[in-house]
Length: 257
Image (cartoon, rainbow, N blue to C red; front, side, top):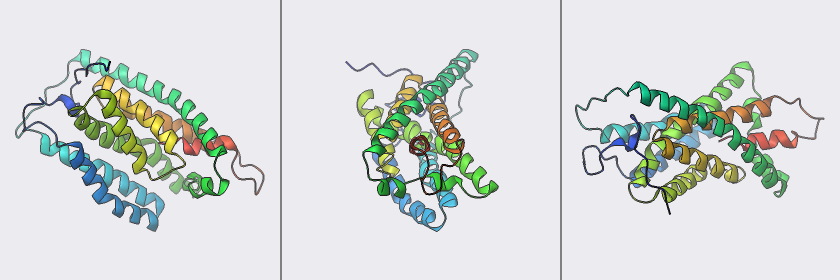
């Protein structure tokens, strides 16, 4: 039996009364269409230069449609009430638990990535290797770190767990809504090598967003997962010339969500 949806915390996109057309967010289809319409431009930008292209994709493919649809769904002249101190404290606890869950999810995702890549041809794995994104000069390296550890978790969680998940929850059970939002999250990365790890991270973030009634625990989990992957990816010294990165480093790159 599926658990009943939990009451949303203040600020959650699912807090709108379902019967009020002025406050009901557009459907999941509208949100996915907006993402897919902008995604080819993001891919073209990434082809020109990976880092600016990825930044453009996070901001204008993932974040902008979610923000635009949320603004369209908000009633005119609506004023948000300030959450009570008890709600703020509860959300802070959930966010901390989300970060801890993200670290645990990283351990699982890294194990899945190691097993998955061991069964695939090395040439295919190398074609989707993310390590070169973090191998530029100091400023490029810092930009890549900020993009992976901060921008991606915020923009992608707002898009998939802040906008898409509530739209799916209005049309079906929590289990199906989390599953479909997770599948969309994994597919849109267009990375068959990271696909299993993306499914795990997406499912974890979807569950946290649903249980917490807010996207913040999911953002914390996503950021913790990516930060742990980056620490492992950038920490070990390079192996012997020609050997490529150690298996743990390759798995860390694949655990990035």
